[in-house]
Image (tube, rainbow, N blue to C red; front, side, top):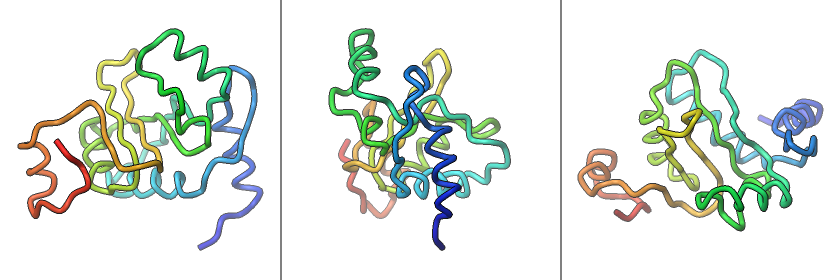
Length: 147
């Protein structure tokens, strides 16, 4: 299929940097990744977005508040989303992201508003997970994730 330009424009507004009311062009590959995770989870509720696009100035401000904000965040490129889906356990969503191997997967179960981060950058994950957990997710051993 193809994206409808007007639909993409609306998504760009929804995923804008709300602190500066600044939209960007979100990468459609990110939308595909999040949609596939939604489908794989068997979700039926709305995706609750914590953060989509983040302007460089917002990213810099957040870096001053937290060590967990990357200097070259994929959020600034329109290639990352922090979200959760009501009714879908966060760990299940993280595991789906890991199995997809479509980019970065961050897991924040104890954040003020727990969420999963997914991006379309290099395949990586944080925080680290045990070898045993990786083996249970990838029993054939074919993964780009390293414990």
